[in-house]
Image 1 (cartoon, rainbow, N blue to C red):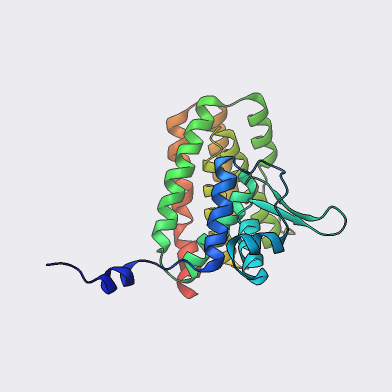
Image 2 (cartoon, rainbow, N blue to C red):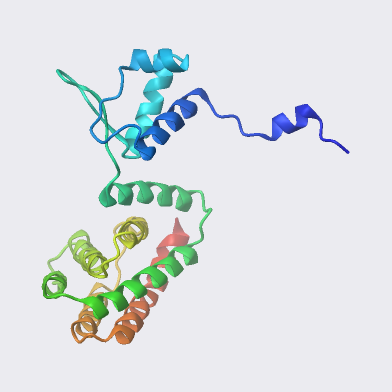
Amino acid sequence: MTMKRESLLASKPVRTAYQQVYDAIRDAVLSGQLAREERLPPETEIAEQFGVGRATVREALRLLAADGLIRTTKGTGGGSYVTLPTVDHLTGYLERNFELLRLTKDVAFQEFVDARLLIEGYAARQAAASRTKDDLNRLRSALVTPSESDSVHEVRQCNANFHSVLIDACGNSLLRPSARAIFAVMSNQLGEAVLPEKQAAREHQHIFTAIEAGDPEQAEELMRTHIQSLTDAYKKVWDAD
């Protein structure tokens, strides 16, 4: 039994014109055919090469810029120039897309929690195993005991900073964007909800002590316990959305 030609064609995803332009330029950038800081041809020239309108080219360039593959400047010497994504850019990209997954409920709350347990537990272990004097100084500086006058936003920023510094200390730059993005999505969901911030600060101190002592197993266990201890508070707000 043979599949009808019409059925086979219908089963293939159709790439829109702007996606085709995007794919071609993206592939040229990633393959090195277009070098970093190389200027792309003008929109009119790209449109002519692909046989599309300038609006189609602009949409492709917009997506390339959003992915950190080009930057566009205006004025004298303006145009679109090849760049490459940095770790910080990737964090923003992942955060936006993780947030979409949360809004569409394609990813369950527990999956976000499990991801944090895995990534940050491992990060704490690695930080304890390979800590440097600079790492310890930065972690120590990130330890904050909330006061009654601190706003929810201020306290949360301090707590976020501790987690961010700890991820940096683990020495794996690929973990940084994932961990920061997941943390940001969960924190943004909380709004002004009150969490046991003083408890979190105490737990951060215990985690730091284990890292400072060079105890990977203890550091990982304390980090996982810390994340799990806040899960109920997070879930109440998450479920109310």
